[in-house]
Image 1 (cartoon, rainbow, N blue to C red):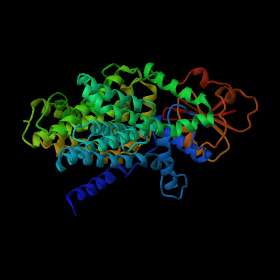
Image 2 (cartoon, rainbow, N blue to C red):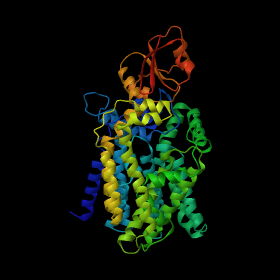
Image 3 (tube, helix red, strand yellow):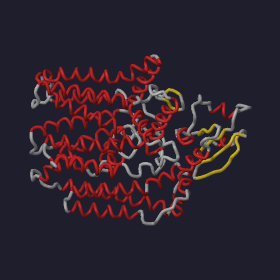
Image 4 (cartoon, helix red, strand yellow):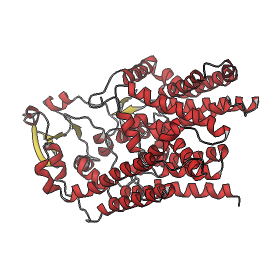
Length: 545
């Protein structure tokens, strides 16, 4: 068997081992994970796969491709059957686990094409062994899938204008670029086309708006746009045909509002995404810095693609720095170019073209130890919650920490082991060892600690919703936004009732239950139509009198 075939098998096995186990062991997290899984669940119940819904009302914020993927996984594993052996969370997160495996294989294949076997493996291993890239493939959010499509759109377009390609190959690459941009638009909306278009325009602009580039790019560019438009019309056209222009107009208005206004609680400082990428993408973030501004001794194809990755990185970072709403995964597209630049750096080190930098060593030590200390501290906070509570001023957080979560008393040693790994591997300048240590640490943390963290933050409310599953009742949160009551109560198809109706209607047709946080408005907690059932871990549970 050829070496590359063994490498494909090895990468697939590593991705399966690290990304699939334990993805169903904790509840989905509000908002995004539950939001998306609920849209998929409602598609299954209603049989309406053309219109994305939440609470059985049109949901115009996202296109449906990722929800279709979740639907396939939920049906394949029959996750809503208690006897299937698969939790609903497994079905919701499984698509990204598969996308994670595919992403590693794509990195290996492209790295091997640009350089060699070693570079491809370095690139894949770096992404597997970095914090947020690793963890997001174990989640149920849209971005890992969206990011892969955008990256492939940029990759194929870079090849369509490469001087190393013949005319036929260029045109084929242009069509493939459009296919993946279209899939990105079907996954998350027009921002997919925007990121791709800005990257192409930036490449052209930085190269002096070259006439020769324009000549080479004009055909594949418009071919890509045409294909992307046709792919996007698979859903947009069907949606307009079924629902008229109203839903489409609301969708576009939402995309514009997302870029120009800030959601409450998500207006962060301008440098927010730079900190997120630097800390969250450790260790590849530190390794990528040098390759952002310094060229090595790579071949012409590798250097050429490095430019594309640098421009993609800055397009993402600048665009989402301008956007007022700032959430961690908004800049996650930058993780792809960061991973390439890190592999470029490590490859130059291993090839002897670059010498080890004190700046790189310090960055790996400092951020690595910060992350390792945080991993060590989280279990200790849970184990010594009673001693810490007097120093916490947030009433809801204090109540969360009162949850009865069983700790083994050894979980902090995973963080301590990672501290040792960082010190040893960085001292030895063993980057591959650091990648492997990070991946192993995250695997263990995902299996043991994440479900305990979820136990503090939301499990009391979700358990309440689950206790009402199958009953003919109303259940709603009051005073905070959540989708958990829909997914975990498994609400059946019906038009939603307003909060005012459920609270004040003299003769409801069935019982109603409500959930509030202990920080809710005092007047609402004392509402004359409500009777307190219980208080648990910061949540108040009421029934309608």
